[in-house]
Image (cartoon, rainbow, N blue to C red; front, top):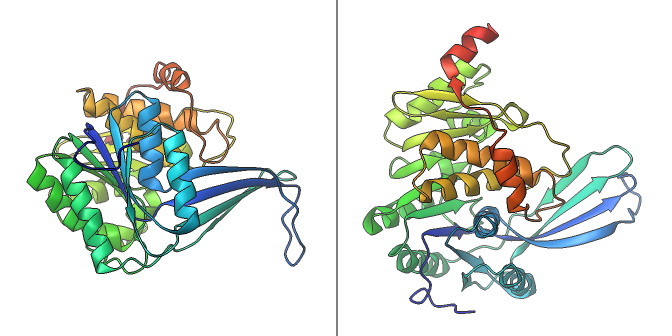
Length: 328
């Protein structure tokens, strides 16, 4: 598979600064001190943007994945992305790509997730990531920057990504948290925080839907983003623009694993937008993709047929303001 950004042409390019080799296993019971015997282990390529790329590819989207990779875990990550068929351009780094470990406790149905910080990236490695992104963005409609920033990367890094997108004339979809979110001030087409990430960004409790809509609209009015989609887990999602707000219900499904459901939502939204769909229809498609992802173990990819089936069942949006009034 070609690794040159000059030969990879895609409508959607994902950037993952801190990817992971995702390890998922089952155990009867998780107990402190004791040695926990695990089974049914599986390995998946992970990290926000890598997940989004795999899911976009499964939905038939034109996609390329740009991500940092180092060490034996980085080599395994590249192999898994290759096996998924996703065009990709790994950026070599000296440190080893992190692992993330998820344990499903059979006795309770609970899920335990252990996440490592990732390798420290040098200034030169960060520059190479931006250079590769700049080359691949030349033919892209959408750039999806997703996931945490690894050690050594300044919290304003995604602001630099926004500048790359502006120069290339493509739209940026951003899904991150912490400093990576709070240091972005403009240049985002669609921001996709969870309600927890929105609370952390705003420094407020946001205990009501009205509070959440107001916070999202504040980000829009600051010029940070054209639209904000707030994922609410089992309560669905909010779509907020400067002059409108909508609430979308979630689809009830039998959950196998919640890992990667937010990335699936981003993938569905991005694919729909790349097809020219409206924002409201794109969010409905994202909710369908998220529901399909809940049916799979670990960060395994969903079946595209499930997404299409669920899309027909996702209810249209209601006015967020009216939904709040009814709740009161």
